[in-house]
Image (cartoon, rainbow, N blue to C red; front, side, top):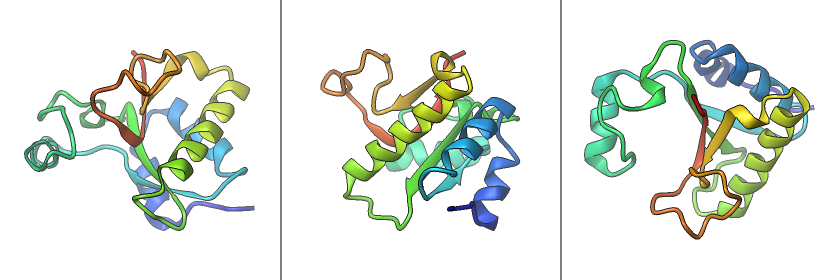
Length: 132
């Protein structure tokens, strides 16, 4: 069974307990890494400037502590393999469903939670957040 490495564990220590539960359930099914939990306003501003985020400093759910968002990547990482990101996202959703938390999360590839990606202007394949 896959398990999180030290860096993923470090990031998970910064996230809301609901997201922690979902991640810990999902890792039992497929291997992925947690790339980010909480991030400072300075780091958020840098990500906005680089085009990696659409949220400015203080506007992201990553900027709260505990963080109301985490970023993930399939392991081993291949940034171009969006199908694997979607697969891991599906596993994370299934984990949330099994915990009764599926209505409380959304993904960066389906911000409006309508089940369609075609209507999204910005796709952040490795992003999960609490809706409220």
